[in-house]
Image (tube, rainbow, N blue to C red):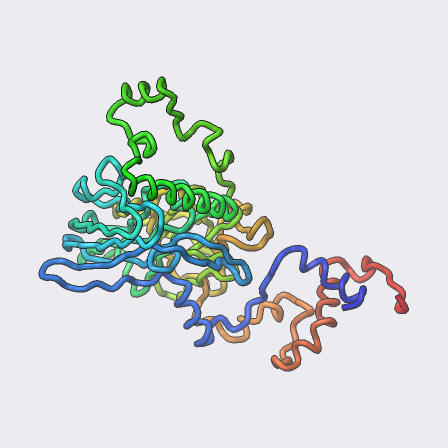
Length: 424
């Protein structure tokens, strides 16, 4: 690339990776989109029980093309697989810990017996490395919920240890009021990948030490940070015990500052599409499994708010922007009333970035399947000089430099281009 080509492309490249839509309605695109959606967890029958199996292991995750990091994940996916049952079902989950860390599962929003709530040293002991635990509960209440690890929660949740849990009502009042055939689950989160790496390394090292001490019978309640009461805690401090929150015992003195923002574990351009047709209703289940608030805004439409934390709303109401706070779930109905390709994104644009670069993060699209083919070509209808209706894929590379030069003219005006001598 010479200087002329470099300056002709620089203005676009510094703005981040911007993808001009191709044929989003091609069968290949729809098949690929299935991999961007939550994946169901199959169950086996044992009498009245529906039995599921979840395991946790180290995982290499790629939120966007070309960026990978080591993390934790349920069943080798982020988010973990979706558990979908009917209200009143008896649910049994076999949880297998394949890591060298401690873990539990908390069933967020579910009325489980208290011994099944997954809070370490309150309802159960943590599930130790290479051990298993059986969770049993009746699925209630109905609605959109999720599950997540409740050990080392600050790190483990943003690492990716969460998944959706849907409890369906066969006589769903939402479906009666807004008939629909298709629905989508969108699980939002935020990740500080540097923090995850440092904390995981520190946790693994500490667990090696703890495992050795436990085998020797030398691991105490002080080292767990677990005490029967406040008096026992204060007495230990008088004898020299330092609580884990003392600065010189922390592996990382800073709280996480998210640099990746994901929907179903992916950041734009790998985020899912929501497909719809004119006249169709779709249900979208929104879950915030992270620690940031996401102000989700849909272009070109209002949507119906139909459930809050899984509870169906007696009087649904319309809006086009919703603050999805940590731990919240909302269900919305989108009516196919305005044909096109519409952005659905976080209106806090800091969260529409990948590692600080816009666009990225929580950016996805509502795509009408009955959009005429010629309307898919945005460049044709916007006067974009990159548009060439006769260009095939084999012609694209040969036209690239000319088109990017035209793009530079469109953005800055031809008379404002840098003047460069041809012999430079």
